[in-house]
Image 1: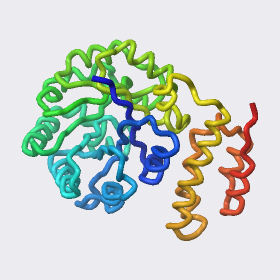
Image 2 (image 1 turned 180 degrees about the vertical axis):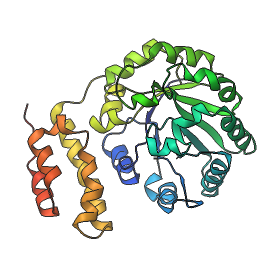
Image 3 (image 1 turned 90 degrees about the vertical axis):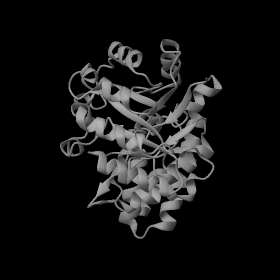
Length: 311
């Protein structure tokens, strides 16, 4: 089976307008994971339901992800997703952000085998849904997964995506490749690799080291280089000129959508400015700084218009 190339989910970045525009302008992605849906005040957030039902999902393979603290939350989220006609649900067991972990969600589940066992029962009771999970190696210990391995293997999962860091590392520091390999071997489920995937060469290295992977996922790497997975598929990196030209087209597509659907400079800028968060190496420090400082749409558009290719 050919490993799949997957766009990872990032809150505030990989929302529906980005997914549609990225697929059209860059491509190279087999599946787009949706930013996680969660429970707020006893119900699934309306914005998360809108992501599930967005017309921009048409023609794409999208995978809804959920973050839940217990079996009841998982059941409500899964049933809401199924009610929209979707048949896949990915459980986030890797989110390292403290506010979510304090509520028992994300990577905190790796310290709670009893809750994982209860969640396994929720999954088993819904055979029409293909469940998967995304996880860290542990919260503080890269071998923390050993304490929940029986529960992971008892879950009826189609696959497990593993980020080979701990939650306390967040997105920096050593990738624990040995611990990753041991977990992959110990799991009864297919494995997807995620974490530190920043170039086509990284994808090649990972698949060479682990030829039995079900796929490779990249999130921040794809935001910093939108051509990353297309580069791997084509066998050669996109030229800097073409990368910048297509990135500007990607921006314009998303910007025009927000300008047409939101009201007022503040709302539009709040949604579009994060587009550039990982792109300073591509566009240069001066335009990056000008974009960040822009307090009106006019100033913002001037800052974007000043971006040019400088070899």
